[in-house]
Image (tube, rainbow, N blue to C red):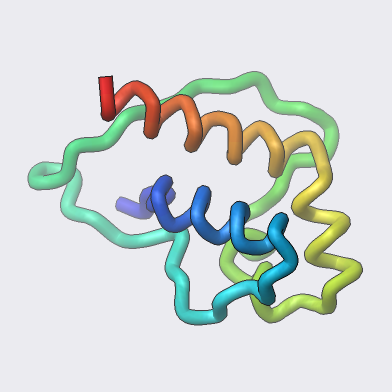
Length: 92
């Protein structure tokens, strides 16, 4: 099963927002054994322009203007907010 690594996703977004270059080594999506991994399913309503799997996995290799376009679209911000909520839920 492929899951979002919320710590890596949030850390990458923070560094990018602070002006650092995107780290090509950070893996925000990872394969996990669903029987041995704690995970949460965060449901949402689809909107017109969703960020897709390829965009997430190739984001660090895109041109700066394309990165900016994706990172500022509503669906990407929704994923970021969901990661933040999941992180808060885990720590509570």
